[in-house]
Structure formats: structure tokens, C-alpha cells
Image (tube, rainbow, N blue to C red; front, side, top):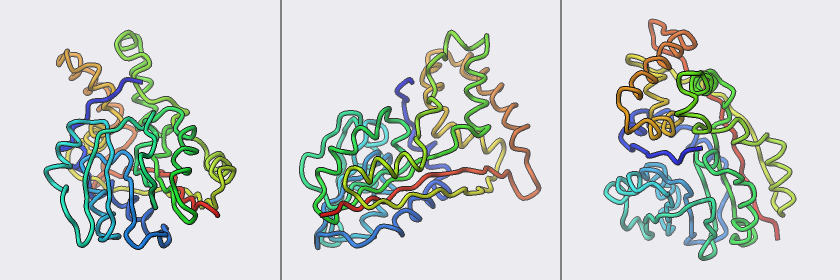
Length: 269
């Protein structure tokens, strides 16, 4: 999988729909063990969700971690600074190797771990940084088999694009099953709550599903073709035509079914 170059402005074009799973996850997180909690937001992106953490825990010191300079620049400008008794800041980190530099009351991640191969192997180190009652919570897209991704992969593997895009996109095993997450988290000494939700996003505008994909799933392909605008545009046109058939528009918009997987794991004594 190619490390994608991110565009915070494109990502935020669908911020309302992308933020809803984050608020749903936060609603299921119980009380944290510290009065002035220390929180890590893994894969913070442009910081809009990290700011929601500060709204929920205004006295916390919250650090958002990401490996995209573009996302971090946006987060620094829009969100960094003191909160009501706490602080919000951002730092660069590669989650494939990140180890907590200090204890945390909450480690949370939104729509990021699917980009981290072998991310469940990192859970032991992350949970070790939590006190009893500390929490690891995350949500990830769980729709790698949906047309949104399947058509993208099929196109990338077609004769015209295979040489340029082979191995570039996310693999079908980038997210594990709910049962696998439950088993892993429980064996690491947590009480785990794992569930799935399918959202039916009604998107507006012209080719909105393509516009959605440009902010997330398409980023590796766009990165791989960045030096060849003609090829990039040809790939986007072919993918757009496939999406128009898979996600037909209606008078009220275009419906994008989107399944996500959630987990809240509380460390036991």
C-alpha cells in the first residue's frame, strides 16, 4: 500500500458525515480515571475530531498524532492551544511504531487504523500505557467489500492500470472482524464492547461518491499518479463512471451506505 498524501480541505468537504461516527463512539466512552485526563488522538487528521475531545473533556491535555504534514499544519492553525483548564496540541507520529511516551487515560482513534498494517499488534503497548480504568477506543470503516472500494481495486488491477497501481490500494484484510477485535482486546486484559453500524449517507452535488473517495480511499492512487495528471484524470473518469452505476442519484441526492466498526476497551485492574 502506498503511503498517501492527504488533502485536509478535500477531506473536510464531507466533515458532517465523517464526524457522526466519532460522536457516536464518544457517547459510549465511560468516565475516565483521571480528573485532568491525558488523552491521545491517534490519526488526528486536521484536528476537527480532536476538538470534539476537548469539548467532552475540557480540562484534559489532549495530543493529536498524525504522520501527514498537511493534516498537522491544518490542525495546528485551526485547533491548537489552551482549552477550559486543559490544552490541545499536535505532534507527528507513525502509528506503525508509535509507543506512548507517557501514561494516558484515553487513547482514541477515528477512521485511521485501517491504514496501519498489523495495527492489532500495537494494542499491547498502547494498553500498557493505560491505568486501570483507562480506555482504548476506536472506529474504522468496515466496508472494504463495498462497491466504493471493490470497483476501485478492480479498476486498479485492470490491464491499463496494473503496472502503475498494483499493490497501491488498501488490502481487503486491512480491518479485522468484530470477533477478532473482541478476542484480542479481552486477552490483553480489557472489558471490550465491539459493534457495527451502517450509515446511509445522503450526499449532494455532482458525483458525490467520487468526491467522498477523493478525500480518503482514493488517496493512495492519487498519490501514485500525482506526477502524471493525464493518467490521474483518466483513472478518475473511469472510476466515476463505475460509481455512477453503483450509486445512482435520486431526486433527493445520492445514497452511500457506509458500515463502520467500533470498539471501546476498558483496562481492568
